[in-house]
Amino acid sequence: MEAAMHDKIPKFYGTAVLGERGQIVIPVEARREANLEPGTKIVVLGGPRGDILMLAKADSIAEMMAHMMDHMSRLEKLIKSDDATADDGGE
Image (cartoon, rainbow, N blue to C red):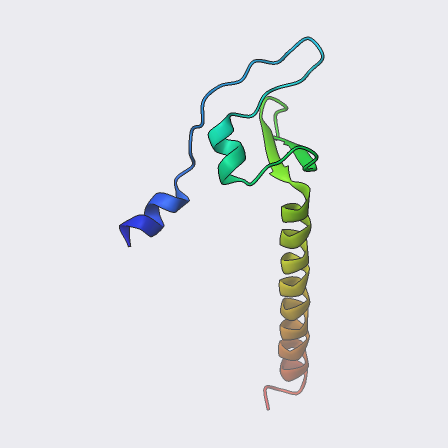
């Protein structure tokens, strides 16, 4: 159980410096753990105030969105089913 909790704690991989051309180097340990290789497409997301940036692999974002859409579809069916039951007087 302790290992499962440890996996959920965000990791600190180090720091990076923004170069003149806007490039950063992702620390090697982060690249290894995320299986990032040259040519891996990365999505750059911004925080609500504009001072936070988050990086994610594009294929991971696409997979997450597909799962979310599946869950939303199931939720929509459940809501419609509940609404139909309520319209029938709960019978």
